[in-house]
Length: 491
Image (cartoon, rainbow, N blue to C red; front, side, top):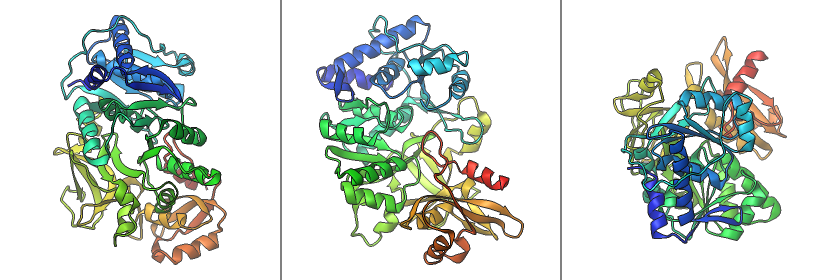
C-alpha cells in the first residue's frame, strides 16, 4: 500500500480540518493539503518522474516540506530527505548516490547546491493527478542517509511496509493521536520528526512548522500555549535545553501534551529534572534508521514513575519491545545471552530495513538470518526492559575488562558543576586502553576524580579529565566521539 493514501483518506473524511501551519498562521486544511500534494505529483510526472524514481528534499522545516513529501509518494516515487544543516557538497553526494531525478530545495539550499553544480527546484505544482500511484508494501518509500560521522553515509531503504508498521506501533504502544492534537516540527523533518508526520496525518491532526524553521525555546513554548495539545519529537539535548530555558523564565509548558525523545542517550539527571518541571509528558523511544522509531518504548507513566522499587533502573532503560518487532541480546556468534548480560541488540520484524542502498557488503554485515545487528550493546532484564550500554565501537577494553562509557558519563553528569561529559578510550601500552573524560563545566579534575571514586568502581574511573567549553556534535546533536579520539591522538 502507498502510504500516501492516508492523506487522501483524511482529506475525504475531514476536508475542512486545519492541517498545515507556519507558526500561528494556518496555511491549508486537509482538502488543500491533498490538492497541493496532487499538484506536486502532477508536476513531477511532467518532469518524467514515475514509480520507483527518487526525489530529493533539501530544505528547512516548512509546510512545503510535507506537500513535497506527499506529492512524491502520490507520484509513486521515493523521497530522499536530506538534513538541511548539511553542506552543499555533502547533499550533492547524497543526491548523486541516490540517483535522484528531481531535487526540491528552498532558496538558500538551491544556492548551496548550485555551487556544487547541482540543479534544484522550489516545490512546484502542476496539473493535479486524479489517482495515487499504487505501490507494493516492499517498495521503497524513503531513502534515509545515516549521519556519516565516519566515512560516507549509507542509504537505508525504508519501505511503505516499514512506515506502516512504525505508525501503527505508535498508536499501539506509544501514544494516542486525535484530531485535536498538533505535532510540532522543531527537530529536522528529514529524520524522526518527519517520520511521525504519517501517524498525525492518519488521525487528521494539525502540523505546525515553527516560523524560525527550527528549535527555539521561546517559540516552542509560545506555540504550545497558542495551539494546545502539542506533540513534538526531540533529541535529549533539546529536552535539556528546553527544561533549562523554562526554569529560567518560569514557563511551565502550558499546552505541551507530549514530548517524545530519542536519537541519543538521555541521562538520568536530565529526564528527572524535565519531569519535575513539566510533569508527566515525556515518552522515550529507541530506534535506528535501519528500524525507524519503533524498537522499544518507555511509556509516559514509566518515565514519570518514582514509586516502583526499580524505577531508577527502568528510567535508565529504553523500555520494552514495541508490538511490531522481536528484540534479543546475542553474543558475537548470534547465540542468546542470559538476562542481565551485555551483548549486541538484535531486532527482527516488519520494521526492519531490507538492506542498504546499493551496498551489498554493508547489508550482509547488518542483516544476518533475518535479524538486524544494530551495533548497539545492551542488556535485558526479566521484565523485558532494555538498557543501552553503548555502541559496540565505543566500548572500552582496559586490562581485558569491558568498560561502558555511558555508565561513567552518567556518574559525571550527576555532579552539579558538570554541564556535558563524554568518555572515550585512549590507547595505552600497559592496559590496552584507558578511560579519558572530556568535561564541560566548573569542576576540577581532583573534584571529579573524588566524585567518581565515590560512585563507581575504581577501574572504571577516568585516568584523565580534559576540560572543554563544549562537546563537538554533528548536525543531529550527537556527540562526535571520533573527533575526541582524534584529539587524543594529536596530544
